[in-house]
Image 1 (cartoon, rainbow over the protein chains, first blue to last red):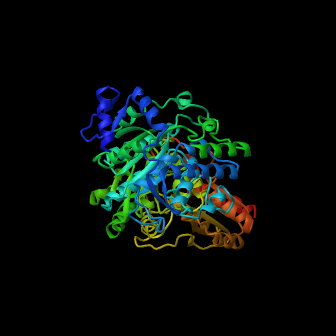
Image 2: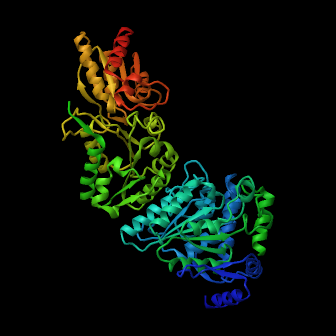
Image 3: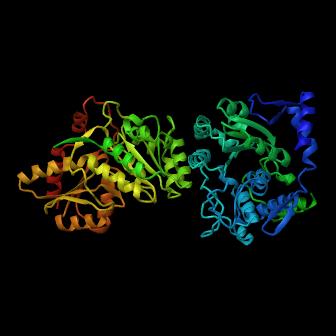
Length: 325
Length: 312
């Protein structure tokens, strides 16, 4: 962490990085050039890849866990015959960091009152959440093959019938409001748990997101962290083609939120940003995580596998590529 | 008959329940002075969430509170809370069968002067279609107070429909009804008048007129639209041979729709639906004049009853 801050100071002197204006603001914001440079240095060599994390099958390096999760997501969607592959792959790193390195939760006791909550508002990324929950020990790995099956517990979009899922989602734009309710309840109970919400960048089109953003800031709900999966695509095309969402950071800042920009595949930066959120008081935080849709399999990156399902050959090729990484 | 306000009784019952149960949290969308959640707000400001003019967010927040073990009561005008925020009510509250109490005030044509944008002709239809929902439409202020107390003690999603202004009192203040069971206010065997909410006293007064003409009416207060008391309807159909429904709501999808569905399956008999005939409301400085324009009067109900008796 100290190293990162040291690097940040150098980057600031080189004018590649900006600091927020709030006195509580401990995060950093990269300029376009700064992002480019950090991407170059981080993408190929994830700093935390060797970090050991606890899974149901014992400790394994984060890098290995992420590969396993991606592999499971690919298998699940290929097996189910439908599902949002690109949007699931873009969020794997962030969900894994939350569940394996940040959140307080207990797979043995999913209803533990003091657990941190996660609302996957971009519910179409459910396969990524299921893979993470299964690895964490909420339900057997074999159950992953039942995605979208009649009578199964792994619905097309998150459902509380699945152990570990904190809220039913699927209809875009509604997760943040639910998180506001959970965070308000925690404040009433003087409880210290936190509420994480993952929303898509296209989801920012939904007006309710902004209603909830206003409410969270009005009540100073600093126990909420919104993570925007900025993978730059929605179903029909790029967000900027369909209906521009930029400047995202300025919008949230104007709504009274503490705003952090990170590379969503830079594990160190995501962890650091989550820590900054924990030390931000009096206002909610949003992390705008720049991600790559379809991350991890070169030919799936972008919007090609937004909804399409890999055939047997593509699945084999994707799994081979993951193995080589 | 004495006139009393439903929202006043709701507000007082809410305060009473909120005092006894610290898990109750109240949400409002900038209309607390009208919905009378203000009584609770004054006593328990920390458990009152002013969400502002954003009903969709309000329903989502209520869902989140419920997921964290609270008992949220969200109130606003009927057409906005279950109309504008319908998809939130459906997809977030009803689908999870959350313990959220949704209170729609100013229902039907009761906000007469405000006009059709603020009136609600479809709120019963859009809530009763949702799985897991209980839909309760009290006939007077006393029943509104009972419904508030009763529904806060039950688990699960509820829509409570209240009117603006004052209505004739049918029940004593301490009335205890039963959710899902129609209340028989008058027994008779020529025709059954099934009514709900503000139209129950209209039904009673129509029954009086009919009585003078020698027609004996059974009057049911169908205060719970869902779950519907199908047994009482089947019995009424068998014993009186015809039915009139009366509601301050569209005849499509509301009480008339619900009764017709049930009776046609259980014991088909002629039915006449009195209500708003597939049209929106309109402005009227005088509420009674608006009801007359829309045919929601004892005379109209009596007329429908005479006709349906003839068609037996």
